[in-house]
Image (cartoon, rainbow, N blue to C red; front, side, top):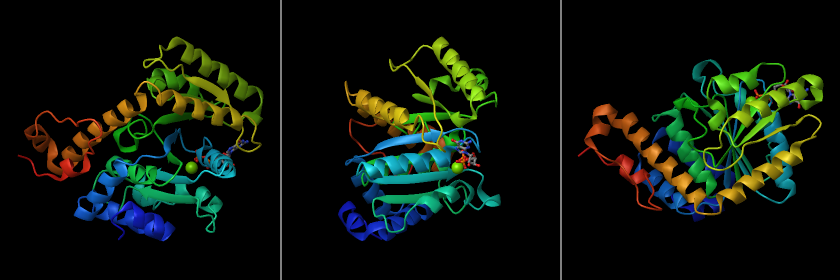
Length: 301
Ligand SMILES: Nc1nc2c(ncn2[C@@H]2O[C@H](COP(=O)(O)OP(=O)(O)O)[C@@H](O)[C@H]2O)c(=O)[nH]1
Ligand SMILES: [Mg+2]
């Protein structure tokens, strides 16, 4: 396995696939930890989380975003998280994406991650994979169902979260009730080609967002788009760029990533050593820029 970033870059997709497989099967191995520590210190990509219920159109939209970023000459890494493990064998979420990923395109890499075949928790492994890919690509897309659930938590790993809502599904109202309203920075009504029902979903969504106070000072943007026709996709790209630019000012990006790293550290220790192990470690914090991977591997004091 390539144990540093330089050899990963030289090794292309095959080397990255091997490194990710190793990361899943042996997250605590010294080589994996060293690679992750190096990647953590060399962030490059904006990590974009796409979330929303199955069938809402996340994969189709990912295909559009990939196309747009590749047209700009940016490289893209994709992680499709499938929390449903066994039954689907990890194929469901990744399928549509895999069809679109051009094997010849060295600027595009797609990886499915399922709940099976792994030692750590799915959230733990997904975050590590995102950190690794963040050092290698210009954009990292993470597609996952569910928000605010630990197994599939996208807010804990993305710089920018896009929440997708299906027209006519009542998702817009669910959005308020379930308290997901604080999680995304962009809320998207998909399948805008469905017409009036999509427009109504958008006004419901905008209404719900209007009631919410932007906690961190970023007013959540809402928009409708059709991944099928492509209309509205440009507005999403613009919103994603705007949020990343906004994060880049005033130390917000570093602060967000630091909080995610501390959260990951606590979860990884809980996963590995249990609640007692976590308690024994006392107050866990990272200094600015410190990676959490080596710390998570240290046995409880
Ligand atoms: N009419 C319409 N259908 C769409 C659009 N985007 C996706 N779909 C369809 O919705 C279904 C689910 O799409 P998919 O991307 O797999 O959803 P995911 O489960 O959220 O990843 C598929 O049958 C798509 O063809 C769209 O913009 N308009
Ligand atoms: Mg999908």
